[in-house]
Length: 376
Image 1 (cartoon, one colour):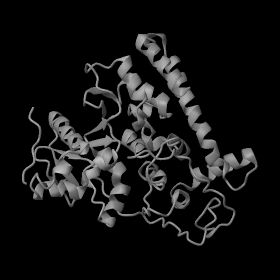
Image 2: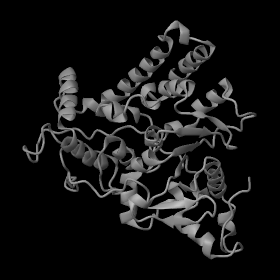
Image 3: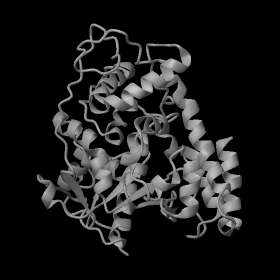
Image 4: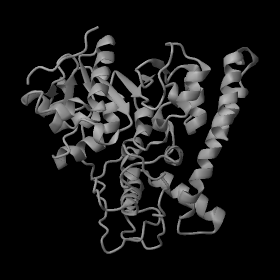
């Protein structure tokens, strides 16, 4: 199959350690809060419970046949599309403005852009989308206009919906070595478990939100699908996300707040505020991104929003962990989340070996061995 042609001329970050943003005894407005809210510093602004405008589908898609960006101002005219999930590779990525430059300027002017790995990644993602019957694809690097603050804020708050509405999500694992075949083997599964993609903050929602998620190695060889029994069980063990959620038999909406936040433990982001922002869609809230505010401020605003949206769950969470430790300021909630996530991982591994005898085949024994090494 011919590659699409042009018409016309995440750096690693610190591990996500949720900040101690619940340390509150003073209640700004007793009628608005059912549990103690964070102590606000002089620079803190209360997050409004009024939702920020967001979209159900992307405003902008890349045409997989022409590699041209096309605008879709209304949700109801957005065509079926694929979507890409990947690790950013620093200055190798292609931005929205650079993608426009490729259309306007001749090759000798855009030679530096043409040589970037990010462009090749875009091309091969388009090739895969064409194979699967999609004329459009959404790729964050080139479909988000970073220079438009309003659009970027809307895109950040809508990203979970973008992935959920996609027909298929391609996960490109650039650190998984080329596979000699398209067969799912124990070697390729081991390689998947070592990928840094599973340790990033933004990729959490990109794993959970789409119905169909396909994994590819560095040379775009197919590795497996999220709903595959083997793949889902291993990912469950690695991440603590239950396999029934990964396989789609249990809705993400049925999972409580504590468990969702626990899934994010030990995931990293390049920008510290993204540790909070990457959870917005998963937790069902919207919030204005304010890069430069710091991670504690971002989590403070997030906590206030969760208080408005899920007062009973947050109240129960505070009551449970405060009563266990005697700490009435709620700080123990965050301290408990790492161990909570480890319990989820252990539970996932136990579920594999507890299945009926008819399911304990050679492949499930391999999964058990992989899980033991992955979970420590």
